[in-house]
Length: 386
Picture 1 (cartoon, one colour):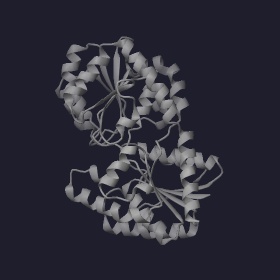
Picture 2: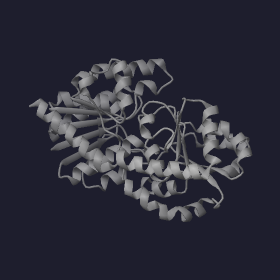
Picture 3: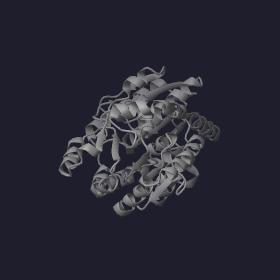
């Protein structure tokens, strides 16, 4: 097949890594793969070099940005139409909200027979602006009818989209976001070395968070509960993997609480180094306020960590509640502190839940499984089109 993926930007993030693994896997299967993307620029770090070194074609559209902008968006749409007419793909697969809207309409205009869109997270729940949410909800409703199949990284995304009158049930299919699972298993041999580099002593219990230092990721929630937890658990350390625009704000809050010695901020970490850093953690805390299904959940479980997560969007599908971690009421600081306390005070339970989580994540979140399931979606869509 000739497959074109379109994504808004190639910063370090879950949707972007999902897209690159899809491109890599399809390229290995012998398909002709092209990735069209906006710039890979941001404090979170770029995946552009990784994309360009993977063997498939990468085309950058400089005017495609995340923010709504009538001039840039129209220019992007026209460029996409021209590119798709030149490439003549069998399948266009879009990712993220901006590229999902512009890319699907461009594919229709270019006469692409199969148009697939993946929902990594719902744009109309992401903003505090009711206007922006309304715009995205309306655009998704208009665009769904021209979409052959809508792939969701969690079943909850299908339910929420249908409740918002976006598309029809027959269009939706769930394909869990895959990752290179063996890298996390192999990284366990690096645990002692990484912990020493980070200044973690053998007795320290590291509560890790893997997320951009950005709005809605929940870092402020952890700072809110940290003073009491740090008083009760002298060996507690918070390990934050990632960088972003809120770093200075968060560092000021940590300093104001007098907890600089309890927080370790790694800064920007290359995606291929994430497994090593995960090996240094004992617990994963992911209090994000908006997700499709957070990639951090299988990453933490593959590293043998029990997880504590807000039950937003599809997160409940990313672990076994009460077995490999805890799903708690969204934004409930008291429950967040309580579940972390349970794990901090019970090493055998941490180990038991961590082992259960590793087995669960291996079965659900491998990149190979994701690529094969996407291929089935494409082939079924092409057969239905014929």
